[in-house]
Amino acid sequence: MLPLRKPLAISLFLLLLSIATYGFLKDVSGIPSNWMPNDKVMHLLVFFALTLSFYQAFSRPFWQVLALFALYGALIEVAQATFTSRMGDPLDWFADVAGIILAAAIIRQLPTSWFRRGLA
Image 1 (spheres, helix red, strand yellow):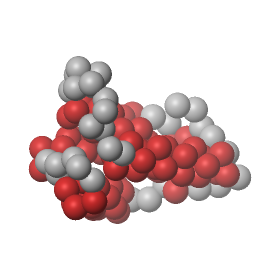
Image 2: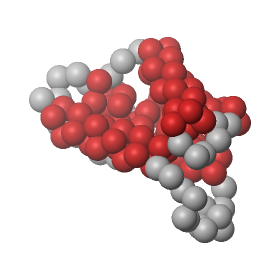
Image 3: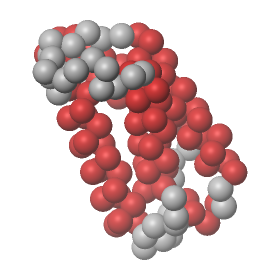
Image 4: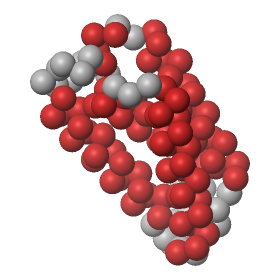
């Protein structure tokens, strides 16, 4: 991940969010079950990427990012159980939160200039 100009960082985040939402709500009944070896790892990686891209685009305090994406993860699980043939799984939500926390740990190690609001 490199320091991105703000419009590019926002565009990247919105693209990732759109892909993630589509992927989480897509009907997977036709996909072979061995295609994705570990659903929890996928949740962790998706929320890791979303958190990194969001933080670079918007540079918010960590508690706001954690609350926002934890809520998004919970809503995805409810939507899966309500509107798709998939089941909502509380362990998926824990994997989501783990991805958020892992991203925060990485962000703390990166140069703060990568997350400045002034990168226009």
